Image (cartoon, rainbow, N blue to C red; front, side, top):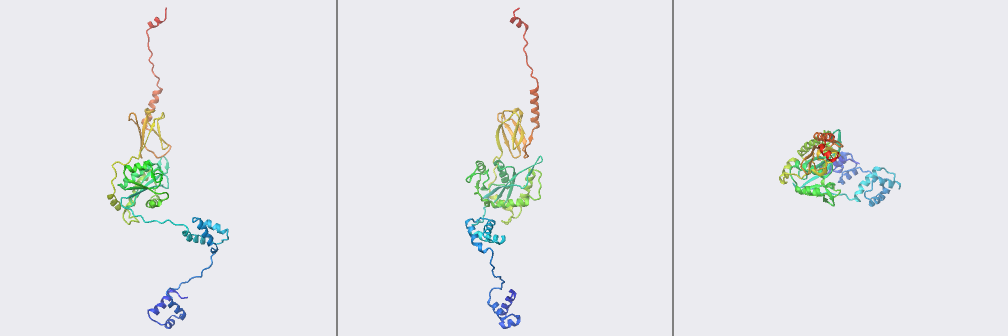
Amino acid sequence: MIGVEQWAEIRRMKFVEGLSGHEIHRRTGLHRKTIRRALASDEPPRYSRPPRPSKLDPFRSEIERLLGEDPRVPAKRIRELIEALGYEGSKTILDDYVRELRPRYQRRRTYQRTIYRPAELLQFDLFEPKQGIPVGHGQTRRGYVVTAELGFSRALAGALVFSKEFFDIAFGMSRCLGRLGALPEKLVWDREGAIHAGGGRPTDAFAAFCGQLPVGWVILDAGDAEAKGLLERSHRFLRTNFEPGRSFVNELDYQAQLDVWCDKVNGRVHRTTRAVVSERLEQERALMRPLPERMPDSDRRFVIRVPQQPYLRFDTNDYSLEPRLAGRRVEVRISRTEITAIALDSGERACRHRRRFARHLTFTDPAHQAELETLRSERRRPREVDVERRPLSRYDALIPA
C-alpha cells in the first residue's frame, strides 16, 4: 500500500506533467496496477482495520431498552444489570457507548443567546464566601455577599451581609445600587426566601422596596439558575480570583478589599462584550434613572419594654439600656453600623451602641453602669422617717389623773 505522498506524486506526474503509466512505472518502480489504482482514486489512501466484534455487541439491545425506560439511569447501574446477563467487557467501552446513545433518549436543554438592552436589567444573587469572616473577639462568622451585575455593561458590585433576612438583603441591594450609581428598569432575583413569597410572587417587603425606588422586578422560575448566568460566571470568578491568597482583618476589611477588586474588574475588557466594562457603564448610566435622594429604609425597627435587668438582646448579643427607663416602652432601631433605642413616652435616648457581629457577648455603656450603681446605692441608703412630736398636755388630756 502506497502512502499519501506517493499517491499525490503519481497523480501530479499524470495530470500535471502528462506522463504515461509506463513512464511513471519506470520513474517510481511501483507496480502498474498500483499506479492505475492511485490514478482511479480521488481519495487519498487510508489504513483501516477491519471491524472486530465487541464484547458489548450482544448487550446493545438491552442497553437501549434500559435507556428507553429511564434515560437518566447511570452507566454504573447499566453495567451491573448486564453483568448479571454475562457481560465481561470493560467499563470504558460501556461508558463510551452509553454517552453516545443517551442523547437519543434524553432531551437536552438548549439555550438562546441573550442580548441585554442598556438600563434594562440588574441581576442580584447571594455568594457565600468559602471561609468564615473575622468579626473580632477571636471569632469568625458565616457571611454572604449580595452581588449585583448589570446586563448590558456587565458592571459588578457586592455587599457583605451576615444573614439572609430581608433587612440585610435590602441593605446589600441599596449598597450595590449606590456603587453602580443609577436605577435600572427591573431587578432580577431567583426564588430566595426573603424575596419570593410563592407562586412567582414577591414578598411584601421586597415589593415595598421596589415600589419605593420605584423599579420593577423579575422572579425567575424554580431551577432556572441559567437565566442569570452573568452572575453565576462572576461567582466563579470571585471564587477563583478574589478569594485565593487573601486574608481579612474584619468585616470592614473584607468589604474594602471587595470594593477595590470590583473596581479593578470593572476596569477590564469583558470577555463577552469585548469592551471595557466601566466605559459601557457610563453609556448605561446615561439611560438609567438617577438614584433617589433617600434610599428605602433597611433598618430593623421594633418596640420592647425595658426589663428590670436593662439589656436588649439582638443577634445573641446583649446591649445595655438606660436603667431609669425600666418598665417603659422604647423603640429599637438597628442599622448596619449601630443600635439605638428611644423612649416612646418622652423621646429620651435609651441606648446607642456600635453593632457587633461577634456573638454571645455583652456590651455595657459606662454611663449605664454608673447609673446602675447610683440606683443601687439609693436603694441601700436608710430612709429618714419623720416622727411627729406631740406636747405632753395631749397625753394628760387622754389619761385621767
